[in-house]
Image (cartoon, rainbow, N blue to C red; front, side, top):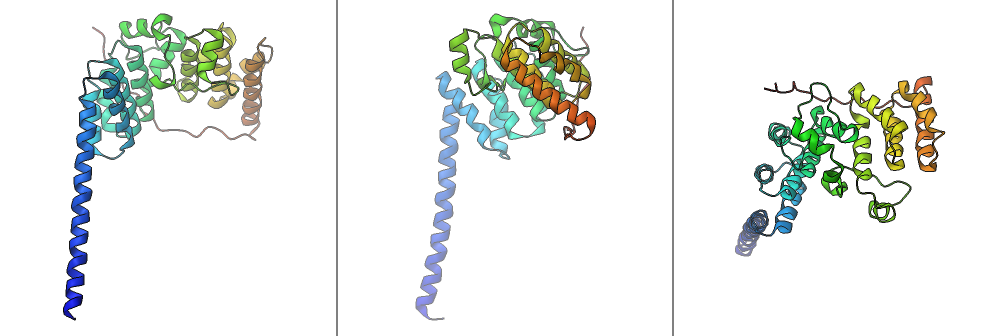
Length: 288
């Protein structure tokens, strides 16, 4: 090999090493920026930094940071941390999330519950059941204090998608527009709870959806309940869906009609049944 070739190889090696060092330095700088956000005295900045941890699935440092943020003094940060833990898809977060179910802030409770559901723990559905019905399931892990918070319309007012409820706009109408025209802050939360219960394997949630579909005063919640019934794919609820065809609100009738068609298709063997999902439900702690 000619001397010039040796120089060329050495130069390439130095460039590779240099690039690796620069990349590692950039990574360290990036973590420094994120950590500054997580410890910032400004609430909005701290909340945003906690939320952005969700962008780092598989990263142990991000997972540990989210667990730390879950204990932040401010509920906004705790809610963001809970959402991030759900999106990081690390089941080791479940024990800490279950502890966080003792929180007294509704936004945190909803975010924690959604995170638990996304990680495969059915206990998270208990929160949304309590929101929709104002009651607890038998053997629920929720304490009376949490149930009281979740059944208080004033506490729930103003909550929405950003708190983990998962509200889905109806008929192309955005949540903000719905609130503007109706001045109704609570129904979107109840609607989001109904939609979440669509995948709860507990029959009690099916009964709660049927009750909400037929008897809820707000049409948004009734429509959401019928949507959830359709997604649930349980043919035993088809008679509830048929009754919804007589609702005095068009949007509710549409959702009920879709539920009737889907459930009748499943009942006749022509429709696609919901795919079973493996979840866990742990025994509720004994109440002293």
